[in-house]
Structure formats: C-alpha cells, structure tokens
Image (cartoon, rainbow, N blue to C red; front, top):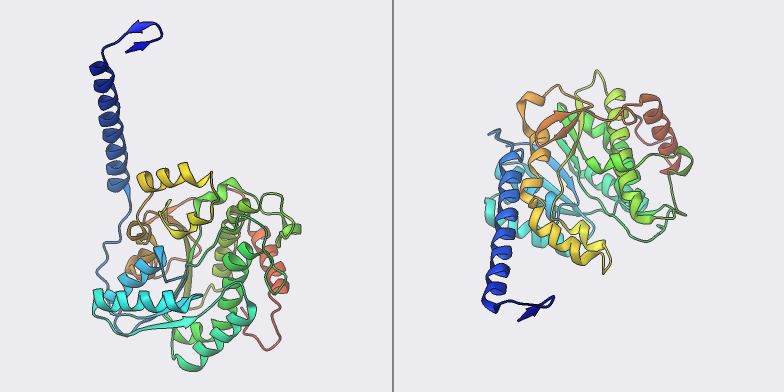
Amino acid sequence: MEVFGVEICPIYIYALLALLAVGGFIIITAIKFFAYITCGFCYSNVKMDNKTVIITGASSGIGKETARDLARRGAKVILACRNLDKGNETKDDIVKTTGNENILVKKLDLASQKSIREFAKDINDTETKINVLIHNAGTAETRIKVTEDGLETTMATNHFGPFLLTHLLMDLLKRSGPCRIVVVASELYRLSSVNLDKLNPIRALVPAHIYYTSKYVNIYFTRELARRLEGTNITVNCLHPGMVDSGIWRNVPAPLSWPLIAVVKCFFKTPLQGAQTTVHLAVSEELENVSGKYFIDCKERSLSSGAMDSAKAKKVWEISENIVNLKESDPKI
C-alpha cells in the first residue's frame, strides 16, 4: 500500500488503526471513570413514609429516577405528566421495582395555564399535604412555538408553568410544613443573560438559546421565592443535575444531533446519576433549614454575580405575575 508516495505494509496500517481504536477506548473509559468518581451521590438513608411528593416531568429521565428513589423510600409519589400513557408505563415500572403501590399519575401540561389550574385544583381537592414539590419538567425547543396562552413554549414549560403552579399550591404547601420545593435548573445559565423586556421571547433569533435563559430565570425564581418564604416552614433550593443523557437532547435536529449523540452516550451522566442532587435536596436532613441555595453534585456551589442580583430577581417575579394572569382569588406569596 502506497501512502504519500511511500510504500507501507498493510499490516502496519491495520496495527496503527487498532492502536488508535484501543487508545480511544482507553481515553473514553478513563473520562467516564473520572466522571463517575467525581459524581455526587445522595447517601442519605432517610425514609419518606407518610410523605407526599409531586414530581413534574416524571415519566422519563431524571424525573423518573427521582420518583423511583423516593418511592423506594416509602413516599406517596404523584407523577405529574403531560403524556398519561407514558406516565402509567412509568408508574408500573416503579411499582414493580420498588414494591410501592402508592404511585399516582396525573395530567399536567406546564405549557398550558388551563392544564396547570386543573391539576392544582385536583391536588388541592384530593390531597391533604405536599411535603416535597419538585419542578423537574423541562423542554428545549429548537424553533419558536407559541402556546395557547401566547407564550413561547420553552419559557412557558420551564418557568412560567412552575411559577403559576407554585402559587396555586401555596396554601396547601404552607399547611403541610415543613416542606421543600426543589427546582431543577442548569449550569448552562452561564451561557445566557436575562432581558427583562423579552421575558416572553416569541421572536427570538436563536430559539434553542431560550433554554439557557429559562434556566437562568429558574435561579431567579428560586432565590426570590426563598426570600418571600423566609420565616415559613418551606425551603426552596435549585440545582444543576449535570449534563445528563436524557430525552431533552432529542430536540436537536440533524445533522447537529449526529455528533451530539456520540458525545451524550460517551460522556454524559445517566439519568440515575443525574437524579442524585434532586434526591439530596428532597430528603437530606442536613438541608432542613437551608433555603435559596444552588447545588451541584450534592454540594452547595456559588452563583455568578448576575444570578445573585436580588433586584433583578424581584423584577422577573413581578413580570411573571402578570404573564401568568394571577387572579385576586389565587393564593399569594
């Protein structure tokens, strides 16, 4: 075989290719091993008997593994899902693997204010307490979609929906104390900023970037909610789950998705690993009185100076109140 005018024995080519393949495998294995040993794990053995937990977006990914963990601890788990068929499949799987049959599936589409209000009314009418509310559901749309309420879908699902739902459940949450609210944000917020004049970005030039902004707003929401709930029996914290091999990456269109799939499968956390910090915030006794904080790998971490801007967080809250059409009869925070 001739390469650049030089005769090379094919066996050397095959040996080189084999060496590159083995080397690549070793590198990938080493990276995955490093990611594993540095991944935070919730080691708490706290039981959740007689506790009621609501998890949004619980039919797959991080939400499903969070639900499984809390069910295994004995909690009554309410899977708040947009797709009831997938939700019921998840319920059957969790019941089978944990032996806990106290799992409920309820319809919730966070992109619809009507659906949120129907879900909240159902919960307020049928449940006597909520001990943990986990805002896990999220989407990352790659093109602009406007909801029935006139909202951009990513922001509606990731922020405005949880914002409205928290308000509508607040009276029950206060009666249930002590209780915890957990918000799944993302370290990707650092790639964005928040424009108060475009909190509902229905004309964004780069729709995929709205996901980063929504995660930034999740942090503002967490901090302002914690401030408003100071002195109550409710704590609020947010987290970055890590880069996780979850369904959210399916929205990336081809051909960008092709190399991304390889990266996701090789280097990202599994949903079980990604759920650890959520579980930590939901159950760990050491966090009983901790509120308004940000966690990565089960440890508290610092935020950027922009994310610590309390005045801007308050303004985001005020704008959100108008956008979700809060009524005089709705619970106040």
